[in-house]
Length: 145
Image (cartoon, rainbow, N blue to C red):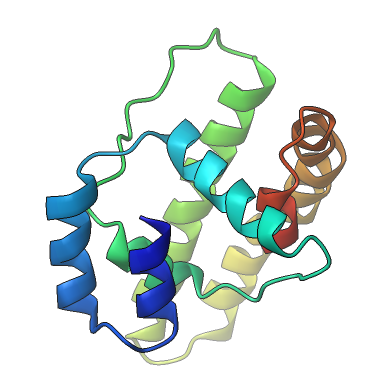
């Protein structure tokens, strides 16, 4: 998996070939397996902070990630992050839709009023989630994000 990703990142494999090889040679992967692989990349050079093309990376892994979510009680910290992420996706889709129409300032201002509070969401993730991951030895996701 890591070798295919490296070849794609270095421009040695086109997207479709990388996807095909991932499907044939790797198959489905869990979030835990993906996180462990990312951690291995960090372990190769602990001083390197990689600038990842997350969209490109997700394209290579499209359809391979096991996206089944663990059932969590409402109000659990991770459940809250998930709900907030879903809402942010909706807001970004609204922005995409607005961008296709003639510019009307008030519509954009209303959307931005809903998006701006997400600075708190990201701050909470950085201070709560990322630090919890780092305490468990997973610091690769935080350096990527």
